[in-house]
Image (tube, rainbow, N blue to C red; front, top):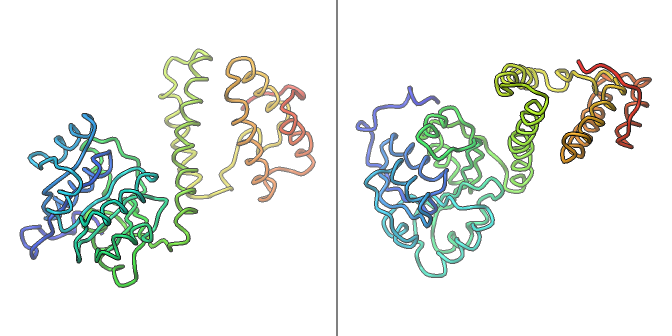
Length: 309
Protein backbone atom coordinates (compact mmCIF):
# COMPACT_ATOMS: atom_id res chain seq x y z
CA UNK A 1 0.00 0.00 0.00
CA UNK A 2 1.43 3.39 -0.91
CA UNK A 3 1.40 6.37 1.38
CA UNK A 4 -0.89 8.20 -1.06
CA UNK A 5 -3.63 5.63 -0.38
CA UNK A 6 -3.59 6.11 3.37
CA UNK A 7 -6.38 8.10 5.03
CA UNK A 8 -5.69 11.40 6.68
CA UNK A 9 -4.25 10.76 10.18
CA UNK A 10 -6.84 13.15 11.63
CA UNK A 11 -9.58 10.76 10.49
CA UNK A 12 -8.10 7.80 12.37
CA UNK A 13 -8.85 6.57 15.89
CA UNK A 14 -6.49 7.28 18.80
CA UNK A 15 -2.90 6.56 17.86
CA UNK A 16 0.11 5.30 19.81
CA UNK A 17 2.79 7.19 21.67
CA UNK A 18 6.16 6.26 20.21
CA UNK A 19 9.61 6.09 21.77
CA UNK A 20 13.03 5.42 20.25
CA UNK A 21 15.92 3.73 22.05
CA UNK A 22 19.02 4.36 19.96
CA UNK A 23 18.99 7.49 17.81
CA UNK A 24 21.11 6.05 15.03
CA UNK A 25 20.21 6.42 11.38
CA UNK A 26 17.17 4.12 11.50
CA UNK A 27 15.16 4.92 14.61
CA UNK A 28 14.39 8.62 14.08
CA UNK A 29 13.41 7.97 10.45
CA UNK A 30 10.95 5.24 11.43
CA UNK A 31 9.51 7.37 14.21
CA UNK A 32 9.10 10.27 11.79
CA UNK A 33 7.26 7.95 9.39
CA UNK A 34 4.97 6.79 12.17
CA UNK A 35 4.35 10.43 13.02
CA UNK A 36 3.18 11.04 9.46
CA UNK A 37 0.73 8.18 9.99
CA UNK A 38 -0.72 9.93 13.04
CA UNK A 39 1.26 8.37 15.87
CA UNK A 40 2.99 10.64 18.40
CA UNK A 41 6.72 10.43 19.16
CA UNK A 42 7.19 11.32 22.83
CA UNK A 43 10.75 10.33 23.77
CA UNK A 44 14.09 9.37 22.27
CA UNK A 45 17.41 8.28 23.72
CA UNK A 46 20.79 9.02 22.19
CA UNK A 47 24.32 9.06 23.51
CA UNK A 48 26.59 10.68 20.92
CA UNK A 49 26.40 14.28 19.76
CA UNK A 50 25.67 13.00 16.25
CA UNK A 51 22.70 10.95 17.39
CA UNK A 52 21.33 13.87 19.37
CA UNK A 53 21.58 16.18 16.36
CA UNK A 54 19.92 13.56 14.19
CA UNK A 55 17.05 13.19 16.65
CA UNK A 56 16.63 16.96 16.81
CA UNK A 57 16.47 17.19 13.01
CA UNK A 58 14.01 14.34 12.38
CA UNK A 59 12.05 14.56 15.64
CA UNK A 60 12.08 18.23 16.67
CA UNK A 61 10.73 19.02 20.14
CA UNK A 62 10.80 15.35 21.17
CA UNK A 63 12.70 15.17 24.49
CA UNK A 64 15.96 13.23 24.85
CA UNK A 65 15.77 10.97 27.90
CA UNK A 66 17.44 7.77 29.20
CA UNK A 67 16.23 4.44 27.72
CA UNK A 68 14.18 3.47 30.78
CA UNK A 69 12.35 6.79 30.58
CA UNK A 70 11.59 6.17 26.90
CA UNK A 71 9.83 2.94 27.86
CA UNK A 72 7.97 4.70 30.68
CA UNK A 73 6.50 7.27 28.29
CA UNK A 74 5.77 5.22 25.14
CA UNK A 75 3.24 2.58 24.16
CA UNK A 76 5.29 1.60 21.09
CA UNK A 77 9.05 1.46 21.56
CA UNK A 78 11.55 1.15 18.69
CA UNK A 79 14.80 -0.54 19.71
CA UNK A 80 17.16 0.65 16.98
CA UNK A 81 20.59 -0.30 18.30
CA UNK A 82 23.37 -2.33 16.62
CA UNK A 83 22.71 -6.07 16.32
CA UNK A 84 25.35 -7.07 18.85
CA UNK A 85 23.99 -4.65 21.45
CA UNK A 86 20.35 -5.76 21.15
CA UNK A 87 20.29 -8.91 23.37
CA UNK A 88 21.99 -7.14 26.27
CA UNK A 89 19.71 -4.11 25.96
CA UNK A 90 16.56 -6.24 26.04
CA UNK A 91 17.77 -8.25 29.01
CA UNK A 92 18.72 -5.09 30.90
CA UNK A 93 15.41 -3.38 30.26
CA UNK A 94 13.49 -6.46 31.37
CA UNK A 95 15.59 -7.05 34.49
CA UNK A 96 15.20 -3.47 35.68
CA UNK A 97 11.42 -3.53 35.29
CA UNK A 98 11.36 -0.95 32.52
CA UNK A 99 9.15 -3.11 30.28
CA UNK A 100 5.41 -2.74 30.81
CA UNK A 101 2.73 -5.36 30.10
CA UNK A 102 0.97 -4.71 26.79
CA UNK A 103 3.78 -2.49 25.49
CA UNK A 104 4.70 -2.96 21.83
CA UNK A 105 8.45 -3.57 21.64
CA UNK A 106 9.84 -3.39 18.11
CA UNK A 107 13.43 -4.06 17.08
CA UNK A 108 14.84 -3.36 13.62
CA UNK A 109 17.72 -5.85 13.50
CA UNK A 110 17.92 -7.92 10.34
CA UNK A 111 19.79 -10.72 12.09
CA UNK A 112 17.29 -11.43 14.85
CA UNK A 113 13.68 -12.49 14.82
CA UNK A 114 11.23 -12.07 17.69
CA UNK A 115 12.90 -14.53 20.08
CA UNK A 116 15.63 -12.05 21.02
CA UNK A 117 12.78 -10.15 22.73
CA UNK A 118 11.82 -13.14 24.92
CA UNK A 119 12.97 -11.43 28.16
CA UNK A 120 10.59 -8.58 27.38
CA UNK A 121 7.86 -11.04 26.36
CA UNK A 122 8.09 -12.67 29.80
CA UNK A 123 7.58 -9.20 31.26
CA UNK A 124 4.36 -8.85 29.26
CA UNK A 125 5.57 -6.93 26.22
CA UNK A 126 4.36 -7.60 22.68
CA UNK A 127 7.44 -8.44 20.55
CA UNK A 128 7.84 -7.49 16.89
CA UNK A 129 10.83 -7.68 14.53
CA UNK A 130 10.50 -5.15 11.69
CA UNK A 131 13.63 -4.80 9.57
CA UNK A 132 13.57 -2.24 6.73
CA UNK A 133 15.52 -3.53 3.72
CA UNK A 134 17.00 -0.12 3.05
CA UNK A 135 20.22 1.79 3.64
CA UNK A 136 19.84 4.90 5.78
CA UNK A 137 21.64 8.25 5.66
CA UNK A 138 20.36 9.74 8.91
CA UNK A 139 18.66 12.58 7.04
CA UNK A 140 15.03 13.40 6.15
CA UNK A 141 15.43 11.69 2.76
CA UNK A 142 15.20 8.36 4.61
CA UNK A 143 11.54 9.00 5.42
CA UNK A 144 10.77 9.38 1.72
CA UNK A 145 12.71 6.22 0.85
CA UNK A 146 10.53 4.13 3.14
CA UNK A 147 7.70 4.45 0.63
CA UNK A 148 7.58 1.05 -1.04
CA UNK A 149 10.48 -0.30 1.03
CA UNK A 150 10.24 -3.99 1.94
CA UNK A 151 10.37 -4.88 5.65
CA UNK A 152 11.38 -8.30 6.94
CA UNK A 153 8.62 -9.06 9.47
CA UNK A 154 8.83 -11.69 12.22
CA UNK A 155 6.44 -11.89 15.16
CA UNK A 156 4.25 -14.31 17.09
CA UNK A 157 1.40 -15.42 14.85
CA UNK A 158 -1.17 -13.56 16.94
CA UNK A 159 0.73 -10.31 16.35
CA UNK A 160 1.34 -10.79 12.65
CA UNK A 161 -1.46 -8.50 11.51
CA UNK A 162 -0.39 -5.77 13.93
CA UNK A 163 3.21 -6.00 12.68
CA UNK A 164 2.16 -5.82 9.06
CA UNK A 165 -0.17 -2.89 9.77
CA UNK A 166 2.68 -0.86 11.30
CA UNK A 167 4.85 -1.50 8.24
CA UNK A 168 2.07 -0.41 5.90
CA UNK A 169 1.53 2.75 7.96
CA UNK A 170 5.20 3.62 7.44
CA UNK A 171 4.65 3.26 3.69
CA UNK A 172 6.48 -0.08 3.52
CA UNK A 173 5.69 -3.53 2.17
CA UNK A 174 5.69 -6.34 4.77
CA UNK A 175 7.51 -9.57 3.87
CA UNK A 176 7.07 -12.41 6.36
CA UNK A 177 10.34 -14.07 7.43
CA UNK A 178 10.28 -17.22 9.58
CA UNK A 179 12.24 -16.97 12.84
CA UNK A 180 14.79 -19.61 11.81
CA UNK A 181 15.35 -17.92 8.44
CA UNK A 182 16.35 -14.49 9.81
CA UNK A 183 20.16 -15.05 9.67
CA UNK A 184 19.95 -16.31 6.06
CA UNK A 185 17.66 -13.42 5.10
CA UNK A 186 20.08 -10.93 6.60
CA UNK A 187 23.11 -12.56 4.96
CA UNK A 188 21.38 -12.27 1.58
CA UNK A 189 20.78 -8.55 2.04
CA UNK A 190 24.34 -7.95 3.23
CA UNK A 191 25.73 -9.87 0.27
CA UNK A 192 23.73 -7.77 -2.17
CA UNK A 193 23.86 -4.31 -0.61
CA UNK A 194 26.92 -4.02 1.63
CA UNK A 195 29.29 -5.80 -0.75
CA UNK A 196 27.92 -3.78 -3.65
CA UNK A 197 29.12 -0.58 -1.99
CA UNK A 198 32.61 -2.06 -1.60
CA UNK A 199 32.72 -3.19 -5.24
CA UNK A 200 31.54 0.17 -6.55
CA UNK A 201 34.00 2.08 -4.38
CA UNK A 202 36.87 -0.11 -5.60
CA UNK A 203 35.79 0.32 -9.22
CA UNK A 204 35.70 4.10 -8.83
CA UNK A 205 39.19 4.13 -7.34
CA UNK A 206 40.56 2.02 -10.19
CA UNK A 207 38.94 4.22 -12.81
CA UNK A 208 40.48 7.26 -11.15
CA UNK A 209 43.86 5.52 -11.24
CA UNK A 210 43.29 4.85 -14.96
CA UNK A 211 42.78 8.58 -15.57
CA UNK A 212 38.98 8.79 -15.70
CA UNK A 213 38.00 12.26 -14.51
CA UNK A 214 34.46 11.40 -13.38
CA UNK A 215 34.26 7.71 -12.40
CA UNK A 216 30.79 8.14 -10.94
CA UNK A 217 29.43 9.53 -14.21
CA UNK A 218 30.97 6.69 -16.16
CA UNK A 219 29.74 3.97 -13.80
CA UNK A 220 26.23 5.31 -13.21
CA UNK A 221 24.58 4.23 -16.48
CA UNK A 222 26.56 0.97 -16.64
CA UNK A 223 25.76 -0.12 -13.10
CA UNK A 224 22.15 1.01 -13.40
CA UNK A 225 21.69 -1.13 -16.50
CA UNK A 226 23.51 -4.10 -14.93
CA UNK A 227 21.34 -3.93 -11.81
CA UNK A 228 18.15 -3.64 -13.83
CA UNK A 229 19.14 -6.57 -16.04
CA UNK A 230 20.10 -8.71 -13.03
CA UNK A 231 16.82 -8.03 -11.23
CA UNK A 232 14.86 -8.84 -14.37
CA UNK A 233 16.84 -11.80 -15.71
CA UNK A 234 19.05 -13.19 -12.96
CA UNK A 235 22.03 -15.18 -14.25
CA UNK A 236 20.94 -14.65 -17.85
CA UNK A 237 22.21 -11.08 -17.45
CA UNK A 238 25.81 -12.22 -16.92
CA UNK A 239 28.23 -10.71 -19.42
CA UNK A 240 31.88 -9.72 -19.63
CA UNK A 241 35.15 -11.66 -20.03
CA UNK A 242 34.46 -14.26 -17.33
CA UNK A 243 31.07 -15.26 -18.74
CA UNK A 244 32.62 -15.37 -22.23
CA UNK A 245 35.58 -17.45 -21.12
CA UNK A 246 38.20 -14.86 -22.12
CA UNK A 247 41.03 -16.27 -20.01
CA UNK A 248 43.63 -13.93 -21.49
CA UNK A 249 41.62 -10.84 -20.64
CA UNK A 250 41.05 -12.02 -17.08
CA UNK A 251 44.76 -12.75 -16.72
CA UNK A 252 45.57 -9.24 -17.94
CA UNK A 253 43.14 -7.83 -15.36
CA UNK A 254 44.88 -9.72 -12.57
CA UNK A 255 48.29 -8.48 -13.72
CA UNK A 256 47.15 -4.86 -13.72
CA UNK A 257 45.40 -5.17 -10.38
CA UNK A 258 48.53 -6.65 -8.80
CA UNK A 259 50.51 -3.71 -10.15
CA UNK A 260 48.15 -0.87 -9.25
CA UNK A 261 45.81 -2.14 -6.52
CA UNK A 262 46.98 -5.43 -5.00
CA UNK A 263 44.42 -5.16 -2.23
CA UNK A 264 41.67 -5.78 -4.81
CA UNK A 265 43.09 -9.00 -6.30
CA UNK A 266 41.58 -11.42 -3.79
CA UNK A 267 38.10 -9.92 -4.23
CA UNK A 268 38.38 -9.88 -8.02
CA UNK A 269 39.42 -13.56 -8.12
CA UNK A 270 36.69 -14.62 -5.67
CA UNK A 271 33.95 -12.83 -7.59
CA UNK A 272 35.30 -14.09 -10.93
CA UNK A 273 35.23 -17.67 -9.67
CA UNK A 274 31.66 -17.26 -8.44
CA UNK A 275 30.69 -15.71 -11.79
CA UNK A 276 32.35 -18.54 -13.72
CA UNK A 277 30.54 -21.16 -11.64
CA UNK A 278 27.17 -19.52 -12.27
CA UNK A 279 27.88 -18.98 -15.96
CA UNK A 280 28.85 -22.65 -16.36
CA UNK A 281 25.80 -23.87 -14.45
CA UNK A 282 23.48 -21.83 -16.68
CA UNK A 283 25.12 -22.71 -19.97
CA UNK A 284 26.54 -19.25 -20.63
CA UNK A 285 30.21 -20.24 -20.33
CA UNK A 286 31.26 -22.92 -22.82
CA UNK A 287 32.99 -25.85 -21.12
CA UNK A 288 35.80 -25.85 -23.69
CA UNK A 289 36.64 -22.26 -22.70
CA UNK A 290 36.23 -22.78 -19.00
CA UNK A 291 39.37 -24.84 -18.42
CA UNK A 292 41.88 -22.08 -19.21
CA UNK A 293 39.78 -19.51 -17.40
CA UNK A 294 39.49 -21.60 -14.24
CA UNK A 295 43.23 -22.23 -14.42
CA UNK A 296 43.89 -18.49 -14.37
CA UNK A 297 41.48 -18.01 -11.47
CA UNK A 298 42.97 -20.91 -9.52
CA UNK A 299 46.53 -19.63 -9.74
CA UNK A 300 45.94 -15.92 -10.09
CA UNK A 301 48.70 -15.82 -12.73
CA UNK A 302 48.81 -14.62 -16.29
CA UNK A 303 47.57 -16.51 -19.28
CA UNK A 304 47.39 -15.22 -22.83
CA UNK A 305 46.58 -11.54 -23.01
CA UNK A 306 43.21 -10.47 -24.43
CA UNK A 307 41.08 -7.41 -24.90
CA UNK A 308 38.84 -6.21 -22.09
CA UNK A 309 35.42 -5.52 -23.53
